[in-house]
Image (cartoon, rainbow, N blue to C red):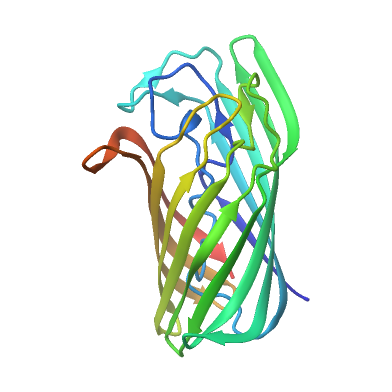
Length: 263
């Protein structure tokens, strides 16, 4: 089994924080998709048949709660720190379909949560929501891509009375895909997309809206093991109306980072 590792310093919705808030499209403002986790080669799955293991670490810190219009909310002594980890197993099969390879994967997230708001203090290490997917991947010398369904199951730590949880207590059905273009040996252009809808949270009877996420990456290989890159992304929380779809004002997760990426 081959091993790879990714260390990510960024911001994502690794856990859901439950605070008093106006109605929004996803419960607690969280989502299953870890925006910013796929920092290098988002469109490349392993090309050779076999079993692969990848480890991800994501560090998250927030000292402020924002309202639906981005304004700070007066939550005294608010502090949230999450060290998120994920173990990803990828199995590249010998099967071919539509000219692409059939690839299976499962991701097991787990993380350490430290939460403070006013007099409330919480610290826990929890299992996250395990996911499983099946993809088709294609490869050429300069262009790589993949697409397929991925389902997140409610296996993560969750308690409706706790202010912060890694688990969301819902099933999330998603379609994901990525493209990587390598115009030169030193330049990488990447794009990754995600669309999902979730089941109802039976503990709270809350039905989150649909989500669409788009991430992009422009990277330059400075040395063999170091890439300098610009990465960004956005998750739009969407609700289904009678006659249309619309993005809910303010309730979106947008990230931007300029950083060296190992690999």
